[in-house]
Length: 422
Ligand code: PMP
Image (tube, rainbow, N blue to C red; front, side, top):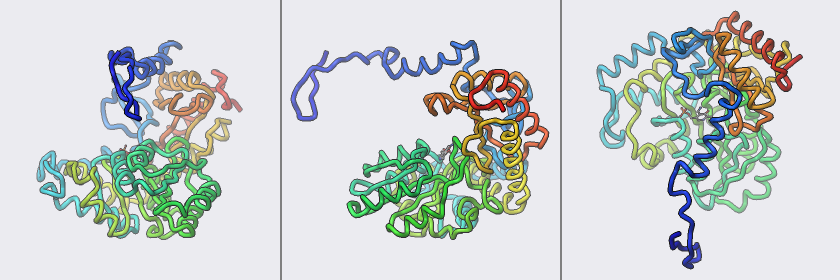
């Protein structure tokens, strides 16, 4: 035991029980989660080693698998032109920009990429940062603070929630994609706060559903709130030409205050961006801690994202193929009686199995049939909502999709998965 102080400043004795990390409740909980696969005699599904580029196919343990585990939606990672752009940028500028951009890490590529992103989205300006997760964290954490209110979707990505916590603003989650519930909160609380931020996602990464953007735009205008949309999974995937959620609904992107996205998915690279009005971008460039006190995006990643954006514009047929593949997977899965939850015409299609154990068993069977798909288990989702999550890419062939759906239906019927058997 050791002397500590309570919040009121009184001295009291505290337990030193967690000194050995291996004995801590946090570590024990992790061990229980990891034992789940072991207990049913299956391999740990995490940290599988992929031996080459991960796209519609992937090499695991020397075996070529059909792959549904990557968000390389448009096949840009591994694309020869994108790889060449990254190689040339590395040869010219080195492997690192070796400083924060604010001081001496700025390269011509940075500005070119940011203009290209802003143009592609129809925004005034854009800023890029080294991680998508870090972009949400630092942007929300920095722009909002005590005295502000953040209303976010209940299924928000971890990076959004972390940003809210960092900000010190009051935070309330509204039920998933429920603008009416969000409206109630605005009507009740808007007047108590200097600023209110509403955060939604273009396409939700666990369920593959698209946010009802028009309703949220109306709300934000009525209540004079800021609206932020995370387009990690909607950039390059929805809307004509893959221009994202604003184009999907034919809404002027300038009506969305903060468009956030990642370069790790459709752009075959790494990093995050914020596209917004000029003043917001300028403010972030000079003051956001995750930008100012962090190295600039490496030349290879910058050039890869820029080359991918150009490819999307030059080859809109890639987006069309992705959208057709996504629609094909969904309709075949529904015909086969699989429970695809709320997914609607996006490249994220869950197959809900009804329990973590059945999700593990189904993914194991598919793996043995040459199909790689990730199980999403408790605690990432509720146990009854455990699922396999299929990520579709533009490079999948209709045959790969037909085979994957038919094997999934066959195995899930044999395993008696929850809602799956027709
Ligand atoms: N937002 C969403 C909705 C995401 O799904 C992710 C990651 N999958 C991120 C942000 C973080 O992006 P990154 O992986 O590029 O850091």
